[in-house]
Image 1: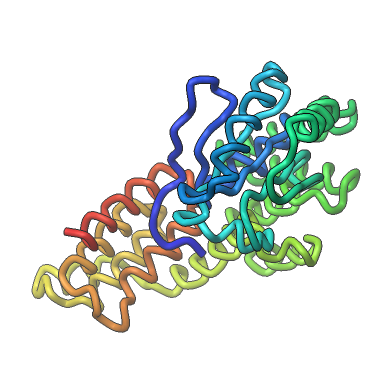
Image 2: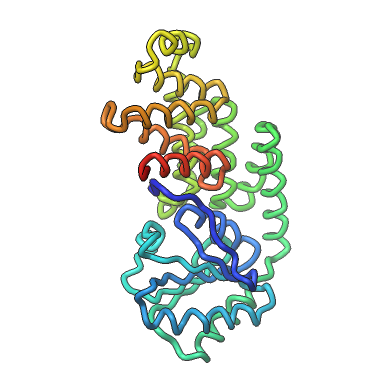
Length: 306
């Protein structure tokens, strides 16, 4: 689980090549590859072969005119995904399509093999009619859920699962619907439909964090009493911690995050680093690309390195 650093990245001039992060992997690679194949190159500044391979890959990707995208990941800075993919040495290159790794190679390669790798990935870029329909349905479900239409979104996700029982996006989407309606038992049960090898997928981890946080926040109590306690004693750390959970439960995560940051600023070691650990739970539940996560991580970093 990544602790610090957001999912921000810098787009390169070509638009087809970006610098990726562990936190942004779900968006930049897994979700993006549902519509356009994505090449992931694990690299590092000290790796000589990487410096040769990188420009060759970029040139081959650019020649596809948007049929393939590329994400570079510095393993010195971002080690989580490399570990999950069991990268033992670099350069290491993976091709993703449909949210899954479909091809890979390790070490330097001649230009002809690089072109062949990219071309084969590009040729598989166009989704079938059935895949396109599923992607359109999932897009609609995601939008509906974001607009507080959990019941309607759940029906769409369930229909997708009827056609594609192992579709991870549909599984996690349906689970999020159950979390939104407070049915945590069914949310947990739904996650059990995911393939075993996807247990550590960032989308699964996010929903599990949502479930755990909802359970914890549900027993937080009335925030009015905690506010009164803080008015009487601003250094009542337990009251501030509990108030943060109560605010999250009341649908006010930003206020809860602010209180936890304040608590961490006052006493970083209180209750075995409880404030920071609670912040991580909230960030995991919100997702790495959520604006509150990005803002909260930046504030947390500023406290740590002040």
